[in-house]
Image (cartoon, rainbow, N blue to C red; front, side, top):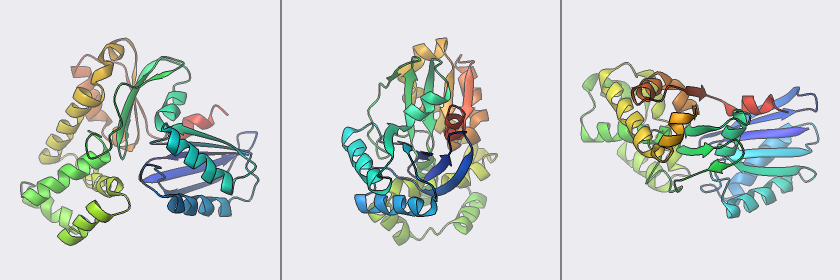
Length: 276
């Protein structure tokens, strides 16, 4: 039995398959980001999953943000082996999962979920040309980026009144609660990303359209800038929920910049399964 997990900072999808590619189990938990969660927190999530699985797992494939850091990889392997002690454990970066989705073809990969990430896949190897410095410094065009922009517009008072009222109805915006989540919360990045749902729901409003346009511009100017040459020669694949829901805006911007081969993958785990 093979257990495959696709984890962002906000949520993690778990699927269990037999040797004939039949799905036997699926579950969604909070996201496991080894750069954020402690061993105790990760162990708790793994035990939740293990308790619900009634089969012996022989292989685990876990894809997550931060999975390419050696220290995080070793931590995760040890924790997984505590719960799935008979299984072979593979820990990979979320970009590795995205690369497997395009089945050996060369292309530029851009993840837009809770955070953002990018690389060029040459058909065999990933070429990543930007550092991973976290949501405080980078992550343009991601869920936490848009959440931060919405909170800024609310706090500074330039969010239009009709949106402001809807925003207040949708979330608890008490200053003390927000400050605590942002400075003392377990996962500030995920907390910010939750506000992006409001952006998606109101994306036809002219104010929100401008926020989206600003974020999409930053994706092309910063997140994808190191891969401009490859984008002229190869397709660009946008992966993740934010990319999926903003695909019209992203496609329009891509075409305007001369990139006419653009594809979207909302749930890469579904593509990985087809290759079992």
